[in-house]
Length: 574
Ligand code: ADP
Image (cartoon, rainbow, N blue to C red; front, side, top):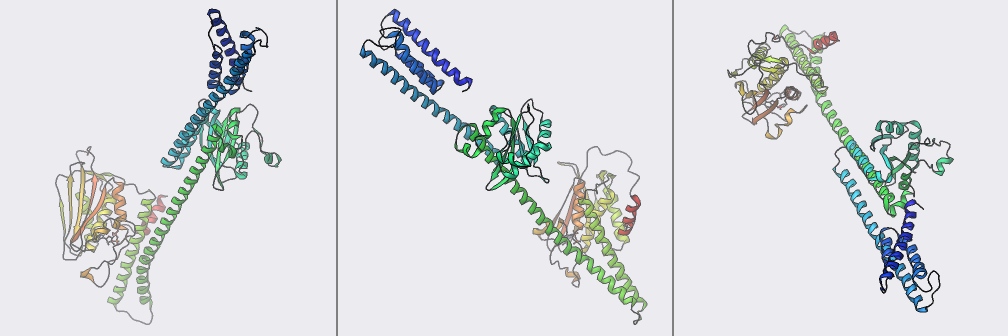
């Protein structure tokens, strides 16, 4: 019996003594009939506030005291007048019955309160689980919440452990009460002896703690018990359906035994802290199960996506590698043929075909390297201040030199108020080259391509460059998709070159988009199918544009390096 229970009986003795004194004092002043009812008040008070046992004791004591002190002969447990027996028995029965009724009401009120607290706690935990966005914070919040709820039951630390890669489960979240050292607690839970206990609990699905289970006691792999003087640790297996999904570890003083024993299954049917704890364990198990399923779904989705990407990549690259390789192989085989004598112009034609196919291969491999470097995050722009007019001139000059303009008209319109803008010269050149090459490729030779640049002042200071053509255009439904890797508009027919469909890899716009994004800008397309397209990009211009001279180092307008040269240079750098 606890000290609290004992003090209840003390109150019973004191209460009856007090009531007897009051009755004696009232008796001195005059006769008050049914004054013995004062005892009933004491019994009622005890039943409602202290407990059933003290109320029964007070009823019996009241019966004896009334007989002893107030019924003739006084100071003896005998009664002269037999009618007095009636009032004495009435007193005893009334106080016993009212005491029972009052304590029943008290028990029910207490149960109602407990059940209300239990519902509120479980609702809180369920809310936490429902509103969680990621696994890490969900487990962290759950341990914090459980610690708060069960701190009054002696819990000083709560941890969630999940099956790990190795043999021991790993601590995924840990909450410790004020005054406890989280790091030390984590070390303790991760220490080998404790981890062995946890592994045992996980494997056998039984609660393990300071009082080791019988099976564990018999087992040869019995883990060591908690060192004396340390707070207790219990590992409670969390089950969802038939599966053990993880463990809940609680640390605390001796009182936490009340949470885990009686066994959780029977506690679940009862009431009080143990039942609430069992219900919370079920909730945490559900949360772990849900989080694991979510994780698996995300993983499966990512795998699926990467498989799809791989298919697209292989399909696209295989075709684009094969075509030029096949042309090179055919031309070389023809040239090497000993039985045919080729004229000078035929030989030249073969060599030109080889040259063109090698260029295509070079472009494809270059594009693949560019996109993989961008995706690996190693293609960060090296910005300096440049005039966009210079970059445009460089690109047009290079296209002219390479014969890609084929005498076509390129109209350039650059407003005078454009200041220097921060950019990676080489990368912006690459974007403009891609856009201009596309404009030339997807529009007839007799139509001009246009490049305009202007300054946007509002709402942000930006540089806007537009590259337009009067070509086949892009269907509205594909205006976004063309910026995806390997995406090409299906079945593009160029009426002016009916003999062959346009070649390409579907990488140019994706690379350009990545470059513009890396400059904190944006790139998009506007188009009217059959009438033409405009590709627009904007780059931010910060307010602190440098005054004075233009930068004197503008990258040389060399021919683009071949992939082999680039690789060589990279080797040399290493
Ligand atoms: P590609 O090597 O196929 O040209 P891009 O990434 O540069 O790859 O372009 C993706 C697709 O966008 C092209 O296949 C083409 O269908 C479409 N496209 C790009 N630019 C234009 C343009 N100026 N006019 C019409 N369609 C274009």
